[in-house]
Image 1: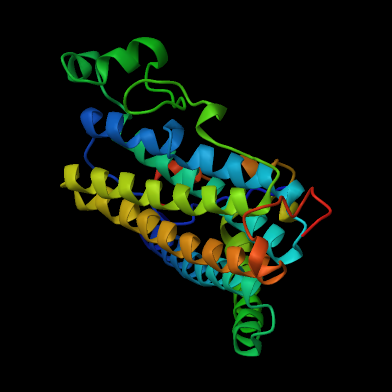
Image 2: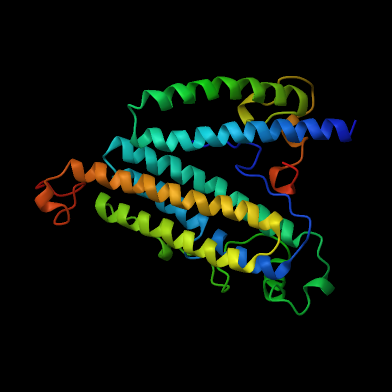
Length: 89
Length: 200
């Protein structure tokens, strides 16, 4: 446990963070350029990629988005993992 | 409706505590040009914004500002966590500590509590967008001021990210203002409230 898992968790988080940020930025761009097909295409591609990564993360480390909470197990998983402000996230 | 996502928009991993620096950075949570005010300003202004695209910009930037205040709070938290009273004694953080221990509370670097009087929601799209563009620049200036005082890379890195977002938001608000103006009679840009007055 520990070291190796920890690494892949933070790596996965970094990947999700990067993709999500690109989507955050594209969202603002698309609000003022709603007809830009290039940006829409990029957004859709990233959304698909992101969904896969979040799914992978949540199976392994617990829910990232509240609505995906408690897919398995008896314990309320929302409170299991560290909170983002604790660092290492 | 908002849904919490269990991650920061930009990572914060600070190894070295620094209560003096925390006292300065907290201004971008609850200060006059901080992220809390930014979020409340944009989210409040949406209701009088009849242009759909611009209402979208206000929603999405207002939402991003919530993520930014979480980053600022994470920085302050990590700069002050596990401090002992001895480490706090004699620092500018001591006064804050008396009132809040090492909890997070929205105030300016000067100690003034966060106030809605630092923001405006005027119900006039042009007025509001000028306010928003000014707000982004004021926040950018504040981050520049903070960066001159920060020498720890772990702190600099997320602050630089936040600073860059101010510039992007300024750009989007500038485009929003142009969209609003495109809908108006160019002779009367500043004479009427396009959300309230019939005459345009």
